[in-house]
Image (cartoon, rainbow over all chains, first blue to last red; front, side):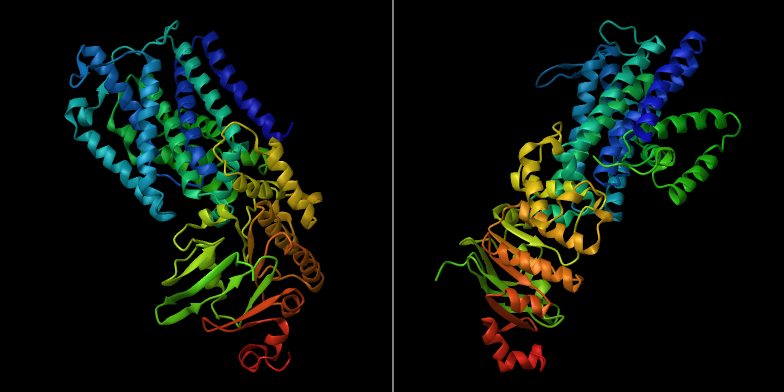
Length: 326
Length: 249
């Protein structure tokens, strides 16, 4: 086994052991922290498909995160007030069922990714970053100015949504749901990386001219990557809203996009477990230093600087060395 | 005379006041190597870019396999069987040698939308990729990262990726660039045999290679073809000697 496989196994074990210990020691807050880390990691796995494999520096992934969050918020608030979401031409009711909410969240955020991708993939480099940022800001201000769903104040949901056979209000059960999703996403990432699609996408990031010369369209490959990426980040958004039982425009803010990107960069771009390491580290730092000073992000910034300057492989790269192939 | 595989008709392209292509009409016939030579800045790269679809001409047509492809994208032309090599190697440096060859095979298969299968375990992709690496003598280095290859080996891989496409015509942009005498000789020998598979439009600075390989030569000066003919005809042409070859030829 390579060093990276050992590290990945250790991280996976930690994802089971830490909440396991918290359950035993009766520390529900630790479980909530771990859930937060797992959901952030899921969002970052989504971004890693676009950023790591596809080389798409998207500063608009909060759009997908937020759409996932609002999918949950809107459906659940209608179910909460017993009002229909839409009455004409046919009736759509709200719902408190997680599987339905997930489905809507993934579908909506994938569609958003498709539209944003179609428009923004005409550009590249700095312009791509700016266009994705612009879409993010558009959605952010749209959410602020839409009073039907809370506007600036956001939407509160009183009871966490349900999953058949589970009591989602028990922290460890909700954590389990999130962890299963993270594992599925990691599995998907690992398969994608080695698939024909992944091979072509990896090449499209490095030498688009070559990809065209063998008869493939790099932009279509990147568009599909962005759609998959947006869907996963959207799912994470729905889970995040459910964790907090609250969704607000801040989920759509560009700071959120930046945070998701920080998870990936700190953990290791294009590394399978990079997003897990990055999100875990972030939540840990936020918890430990957040108590000391409200300016804790200064330390995060210093660390980010160190990663970018000295270790391009992020945390995973520092511990496991350079990425192997295949 | 056989129908040409690839032909340009009055191809013109200007960048501001600079006429990079000025009514270029050339063709590539089955089984031949047609070399394009010319001094620096003659418009050779601009010509290749228009033939391969990276650049749209201001006027004129590109015909491939009897079809007007002037408005088709690079990838559409590649899918029809037009394979090119790049002047400066365009390879995925982080990937292995085999992965680069697999990419070519994947392009040729036209089926990149498979998300769960493993690319390196696909028997037909692998067979194609390995055969191409074998042909250029890189089979032993298949698992090496491309960044670790020497310059000469990258040039070989560049040709191998084109081979995986099993193309109807090759367009090669200075395949000998930066190769030593030894490497240049080896590649010349290889291209010599390749013309049986598909004709080659060869842009090259290495005159030894051109004179050894070419069935026909076209001389490009300031965006214009000033002469086309056999090696002997070009060697003797006074206009060509004047413009390009000088006294050494």
